[in-house]
Image (cartoon, rainbow, N blue to C red):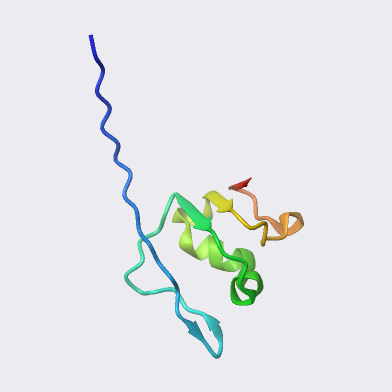
Length: 84
């Protein structure tokens, strides 16, 4: 007997535009269960955890910090972090 699993994972790829005031989140972005931070640009480093919590559903979820940009000592509760 074979089991079939259907995933309900929906992906969004967003590259928030840089402005003179930092990073803005597009208004049509949907809250996510997970965020992948895959670059170490200064603007993302400066935006830090406040940007990640704005992108997550209910300010909770998983952040995959590929480049190790985020400061773990200031990580908000309710967020799990994976680093590669």
